[in-house]
Length: 182
Image (tube, rainbow, N blue to C red; front, side, top):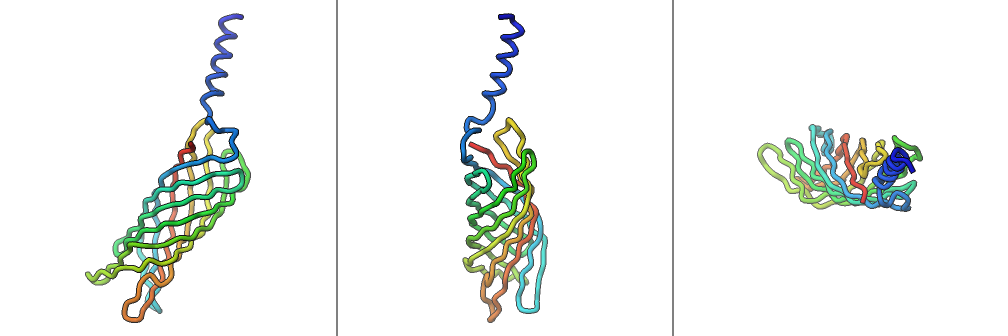
């Protein structure tokens, strides 16, 4: 065998072996992080207050051919609201190659929150939270990382009670996510 043939076989073998070890597996397990920005609105009777917000979070999950299921934690912050969320999400992925659109829904809990009104801090209750999302996944071949760009709306009813007012919180944002595939 000539040196050129051996070199070509070695190069092809190296590229083939550098792909994900579980590329043929039915399920991919992953962990990742996200950053986002958007806004929130606190609905209290006829007095609605909106503000810009930011978030940071982490997730773990499993990715199977048409679905993705994950658990996530987020820290939401704005000038007068700070809160944590723990959510379980389910996504439906549209089959594609490089760019994969998806839609999803999630439920969980908003906890450890506080709302500041006129230098007075009100602790938020731990309440159920619901969310819907739509986005795209960028899947770069030969890399064990997937990137998501996602729009999301989170709704949490009756986040606290103050003077017989039970405001609802709506958080809407755009997120950038990176998921490392094991």
